[in-house]
Image 1: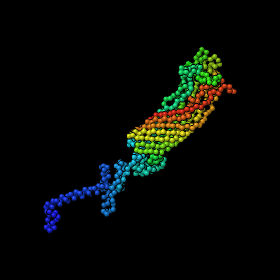
Image 2: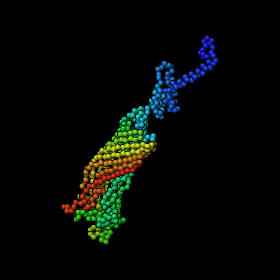
Image 3: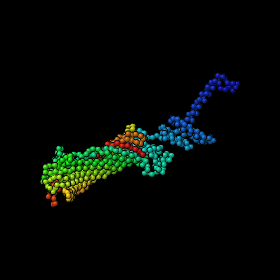
Image 4: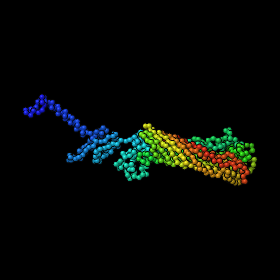
Amino acid sequence: MDCNWLTNHHQVSLSCWARHQRYLRGLAAVSGFLTLVVVASPAFGQLRTGREQRSLYHERLVEERQSNRGNQKADRQVVPASYQQPPTANSIMEDSSTVGSGIVSESPVYESVTSEETHSGYMSGGSCGCGGSGGGLVSGGRCGCDDFADIAPTCASGCGIADGCDPFLFGGPLTTLISRMTIRAEVPLYWRRAAGPPALVSTSTLGGTGSANLLLGNTALDDSATAGFRLVLGTSLTADGRYGLLFRYWNAGKQDDTYNFDSTQFPTLTRPFRNTTTVAAGVPDSQIIAQNTATAESNGNISVQSRSEVDGVNFMLQSLLYRDRFTKVEALYGYQYLRIDEQLAINSNTNVVQDPNPFLEGTSIAVSDNFATTNTFNGVVYGLMGSREIGRLRFESTVRLGIGNMHQRANISGSTTTTSAPPTRISNTTNQGLLARNTNSIPYDNNVYTVIPEVGINAAYCIRRGLDFNVGYNYMLIPKVGQASRQINSNLAVNLSDPLTGSPDPALNYRSRNYWLNSLGLGLQWKY
């Protein structure tokens, strides 16, 4: 049956009318769906992101309709949002602030962030969400402008006042470097190569240096650890962290030890040496400080003081060699300074109570020997520094090589003060001690070429954003170091006269050796 309108009779068949009604309802449903697709397509990317994005799109749509009211023929085209990855919370906030200010963004574009931009490298805080993005020794984070701005935004990085940057506060290059700064402070325990002097104190009047008689010497004086300090400052020269500056200062602490020996504990106290007056090789002999025999009696004490100080400074430029999401390798080159100061002083006091020579009874004798050395290194340093992140942990390793000049200096001095018996008490002082005499007290200065290798490893745990807890180990080998204790010459010619008739002992024979220094430190790292 023909289901068109019957123009001749102006009537519609009931069955055809029912079928026509179903057709119209289907057509209306399809038309409504197509209308919904056309209207919703510009916000499809935002509808995927949740309730806030749907609300944001609705507010923009209402605002556009209000702005277009009264101008139905306006040539305005809504461009669909370019969606490359889900927008961040900062992006949503920025969009909300834009809508609130009355500015309509037709095509918000959410750019994807590469793995390099989200990487956090050496001293950067980690990819655990604690540290900033950008990955450098001193990287910061993001403020919507660059990779180093959410921790300390700078106008040099492209941020404006709307991004939380004050151009008057963050306007200069110096403040830009400060805003990217990372600070690491550590309190390490340092172990250094101890002083190793010859025999210094004995209980044998014949100069015996056997284990039964020797009280001090022929072994390391002190190899215990001392608390030091290490400070590392770094900043990035570029926004992408490819170049940076690193400053490091460390101090191994002052090792100051004193050893006292008294005749109340040891009735016999002597200072051993080798007498070369008649035999070139020397024979065992000693200076008596305290004794108690049938014919002679004296009391006294011996004090030995040892001091050691080590510190250093590095100024280095960092250059990025390789970086991915979790790994970073940088080259280091710059300036290195190192100084090692040591001193060993031996002081003895003797009071003669009884002596075969009656003129010596009541006399007091004070003898002092002082040995001091200074080793100063100045040179260039080259190295590699790498880091690897695993969750909240970050592991770092460093290899450095210092190449330059070591300036060696030694100063030896001595004195002997003799005070006569009472009641006169007349004192006489000479500038010679027992082992520090005019034959070896000439200052020594020398320059030698040396290479200083250094390795370090560090493990950092991310406590919170911008704050890490660090545990690190460092080892340094310093060749050609003259220690104070090594400058003691035990050979002594006791019959020196003017003119000289004996061998010029003790002579100055400057001796150097490899000096090692290692540390185990705990500390905190904070990113500005």
